[in-house]
Length: 519
Image 1 (tube, one colour):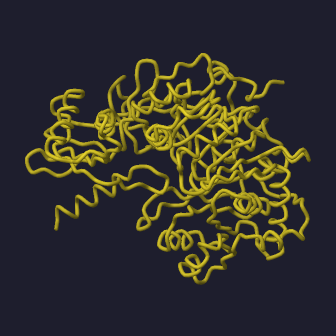
Image 2 (cartoon, helix red, strand yellow; image 1 turned 120 degrees about the vertical axis):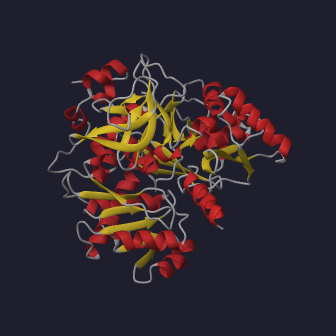
Image 3 (spheres, rainbow, N blue to C red; image 1 turned 60 degrees about the vertical axis):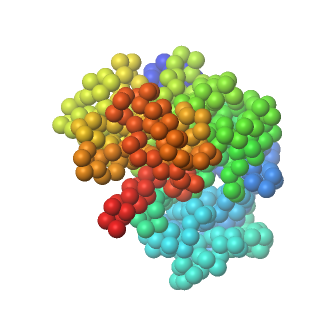
């Protein structure tokens, strides 16, 4: 009997994708289901087949097999049980991808405890807020971060993940049989945000792995036989769910990046590992393009996807020229999951370079006017998802064309209304990024006594930011959009504020401008 992984066409996805077909991809059922078993234990067959390839920033490659991860995760689960860790208790860990990271991630879930991955670049404030929120029994981190962690959370037991810990767990059995149901909690995932404004943890059950597979099959196009790579940090949704859990659940070897990101090191890994399926953030592709080093490498990419934020036209063109395949956008949030995809690898699906794609099979999305009525094709409105018998806001603006493709038009709070004109920050940014001297740009609306708001652009460039350059950028934008749609204010900056996940943080810019207005 055919499984969903046997189908590759868009027509088959629409015809065959359903909830029951998803469950058939796994060993477990609703009464007995565990993410660590599905991702690691059931694929540990004694062959030494690689599960994860870690490209470290220092040039090292770390290859971890299903067999090794199954044994280590089981030993760690026994170690936790011996310490009295109960089902539902949280185990936080702040580690780069490595043997200790995957040992902790899967070992905690095997016991029925809840894994809480934390970004390794959190400072004491960011760590303290999240620890206070989730109240973990343990925090696992490296020696470098241990002192900061103990200072930030003095009442929390901090365990250093080093050779000594591996030796300590080595005396426990290498097999642990989980006893969790699909409805049991498995992961707390924090969205990226500022340390002063804690985003709520999204609480995932073990069943989330089943639901995830729609987005994996049709958002990244993952299939058995792929050589997969996702450089996004597994502390965030894309890196954990799409870069780690989804491929491993299908028995696919995945790859990731550890340490300070380097686009050239990434391209080395893509070539060395023979990667055929790459899923990354738009920023990763932009940095590869800007390195100017891609022509040094031979790539075997057959499927390619991106997420996190819209990709500028210059980078989309570079992706097609460099890898020979279209860039498939994948849209979603940590809260709602991935909902719009471009079906990478589907021969009967036409990818439109600037489109978010079409809904994941089985989902209903609609662009709506403020009064809740459906927007006409081409009309910008709020993107809504039908969920639990009501329309739920994604907090994003979008439009849909006559063929059912959705397009991102910015966050709902990224709309700029100036003198009665409604403008999209994303559209203006994409235009400015076409200028050869603009490396990065962020656009916001700032208060103006006469027009209500005006467009202000924050520009990163190697070229000196003089008045002539400002006028050139204004004319460049006005000529390509419309006479009113250009940045009336331009500020040249060394860098743009980013969230920990690498997205441009316009809120920081808006807050900065608001403070300046009142000072």
